[in-house]
Structures are given as C-alpha cells and as structure tokens.
Image (cartoon, rainbow, N blue to C red; front, side, top):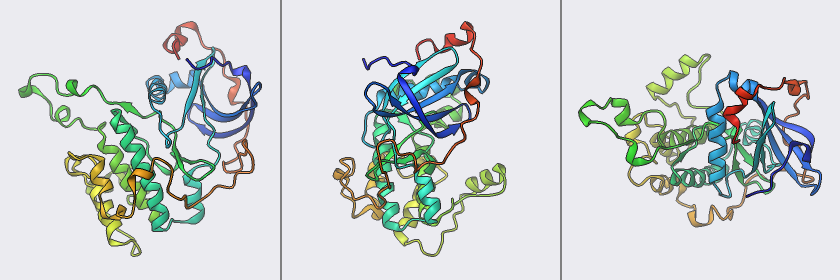
Amino acid sequence: EPPAYRPQDFDTLATVGTGTFGRVQLVREKQSTRFFALKVMSIPDVIRLKQEQHVHNEKSVLKEVSHPFLVKLFWTGHDDRFLYMLMEFVPGGELFSYLRNQGRFSSSTGLFYAAEIVCAIEYLHSKEIVYRDLKPENILLDRDGHIKLTDFGFAKKLVDKTWTLCGTPEYLAPEVIQSKGHGRAVDWWALGILIFEMLSGFPPFFDDNAFGIYQKILAGKIDFPRHLDFSVKDLIKKLLVVDRTRRLGNMKNGAEDVKRHRWFRTTDWETVPERKLKPPIVPKVCSEGDTSNFEAYPENDWNMAPPVSQKDLEVFKNF
C-alpha cells in the first residue's frame, strides 16, 4: 500500500486548474520536497452536483491503470470538507494552450499526438475502461513533450462482458442490444474530432448553441479545410461514422484497424509507448515546480467550505 499522506504534509504553491467542484494545485511534500498535483474537491459541491459516482470512478480507474501516457495517482483521502487526489505534476501544460497559440498543427505534429493517444486508448480499452472525455484540455505534455491523459472523472469501467446482454432476447430493448452511450466507440469518435481540430484549428461540428451542434453531429456532414491531405481526411471520415458498428476502432479488429490506417503508415507502433517518437513541441520547463505553462488562477476563498455532516461523509468513507 502507498504511504498514507495527510493534507498538512504539503505546502500549496499554486493553482494549475479549476473545475466545477474543486481545483488542482501544485503542492510540495514538506519532507521530500517532491512536487505533486493535488486535486482538491469540495464535498458539498460534489454532493450538490450529484458527482459522487464520477469521483469514485476516477479513483478506481486511476488505481487500476499504469501506462506512460496516463497520469499517475499516488494517494486519495478526505477530511470533513474536501476529497483529495494526489497525482503526478505534469509541467508542460495542456495541449489545448499549444494548439490555441499555434492556431493549428502541421500534419506531422498532429500525427505524433494522435499516435500516442491511440496507444493510450487501446490500453484503456484492453482494461475494459472507456475514457469518454478526450479533448485538448485533458491532454497534458510532460517536460519532454510526450502526452499524459488526465481527468478520469467520466471514465467508466465496462460491465463484465458476460453481463452486457442479460434477459430474454425477445424482450431486450434496442438500446440494451446496442449498449448505446457508453461503449468503446465513443473514444474513437472523439479521436476523429481531435485529429480534425488539431489540423484545422477548429472542431468539425460547431454552432452557437448545444442543440445546433447536436444536429450537425447527427447529420454527420464534415467540411474539410482545403489543406488536409487525402489520407487524414479518410481516417477522420472513418472515425466520424455515425453508425457505431461501422466506426473504425470499434469493429472486430479494434484499435488495430486504426493503427493500420494509411495516415499512420510511417508509424512504428512498437516504439510509441516506449516514448521513442520525437516530440514536435518540447515545453519550456525551468524547474521541477515550474507552473508557467499553466493559466494563472486567482486564489479566491474557494476553500472556505463549511464541514460536512457524518451522514454526508458516509458515501466517501473509503475514499
């Protein structure tokens, strides 16, 4: 078992991210002077937003995984106000900020990130885990420029395969048969969106309001910028297939079909998880605890939450 930490074992240095019910802080362990990222979540907010399940999902998924492209979890705990998740600090910042700064990525830059992401998704799926939140904000760069996926709040362990179709076949609803909404296919769709956005600078489906975006997604019509080459357009089209049963990555060869696609023809897949590809962007990181690659967040009085009753804490007793 990893050492049991306490919140007071750390000095808080800066906030490097905020979310709906908490924030991520750069902290330094007082004894070892090692740096970590500490995700601090307000229990009243988690309860109010009905996020208990997501919080437990994130913990159980991160405890189970170990991969060079996934952020590491070292410890979880809570007191009477906050939940804590102690993770590795990834100093390069979000892929999102590099993409916004550069406008769009070259094909070879996009290919590098896509290849590392394919390996991360393939690994998660091999453990029956669907990530469900792939986007540039959740892809961090380490100091060498390799990726780390972060934020596993939406990640979900698929129910044991033998249980997916239970009941008398004649009475099964179509959505049960299709297991709509939470299969591995969603991650391959998101990869298609991500590749498009990396190479174009904007997502394929956008509109002023959410409903307009949903309509466009379901219509499935993609307008490609002129500069995209044939093979990447072909890959994006095959990932953005509305019918999940015909979506690349979700057929019987799984991730293999994606890896064998023409756009990846120069990729040596063996070496990708060994971090052997040369990163196109090497973040400027001056020191171990350098936060300059993250936005600056105001240190307001977010941590003034009142203590929570024993009854409300019950749901987190093993956290």
